[in-house]
Image (cartoon, rainbow, N blue to C red; front, side, top):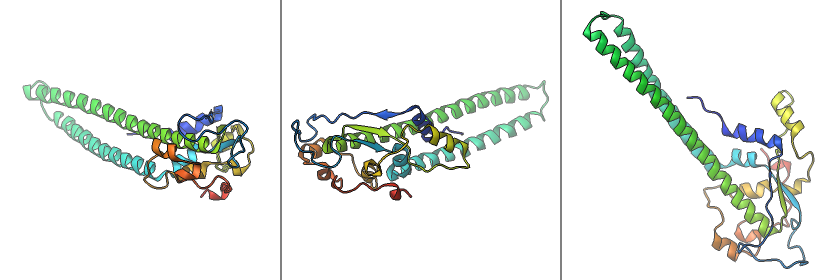
Length: 238
């Protein structure tokens, strides 16, 4: 069964200036900062960037779940092909029977029923796997949003823009077009928070809980590196 890779669709959507605005307001998720108070770290009041596609590609728990789903889909595909081969054998056997016989009619009806059942089963399985894949992407994206929201509130970030940090492949027309149409033309690599957020998904770990946020005195309180530490730039990409 052929499936449309959702990650490719998501990457294409970035060309139309996908971005999310996360207002750094205190909503009982971290310590409030009084107006005019000194900035607690280097990110306060700034616009930062995140490469969501890169996080999806390097999110180990997500990749493992997606690979498991692919294995299940491949196994089902093998099973469906076996059933299809059996239907072909029945059809070939039908040709050996007398078209006017009762046996021929019974076999013909059986083949028709099994072909219909097989077609419906293939369609249902295809929809099921696509829905499961979509849910995996959606659930993971919500986790990413949750971590970004916490990071930004804890660090006083005002705005997060989504960008693509992959280098352009000059021999790939799609890559060249994507590079030309990217919304962020240049950025200070110290404003790329992708490695901070990705670190949260490097191992099977849960997103920050309400208790974590309530007790945090800053981003580092929930497991993030101190915001004063320079964010790794392009070299962190493999």
